[in-house]
Image (cartoon, rainbow, N blue to C red; front, side, top):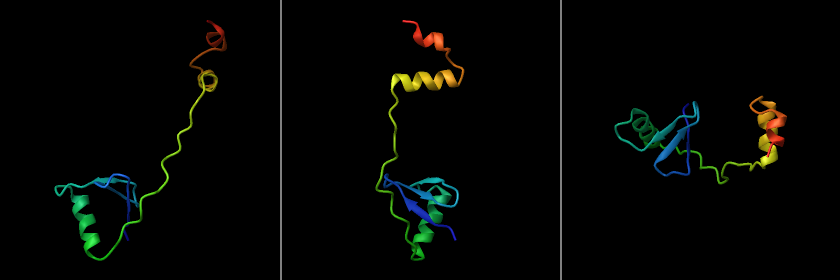
Length: 80
């Protein structure tokens, strides 16, 4: 059975089975399918209350990543 989850945008829902984001647009087959699903008494899962976690990187962290990915050499980092 297909199920859906609300998103932080009230005009977009997400289909759980494949992760597709479906905009509120009557021309969109998936949106019409969602409306039909609602009409059968189904309810979507609530939107997550937590925003995605974003980790800030320091300049040193970024330099370490770039060296590991062979984008920069260690000597590039120590040049001023």
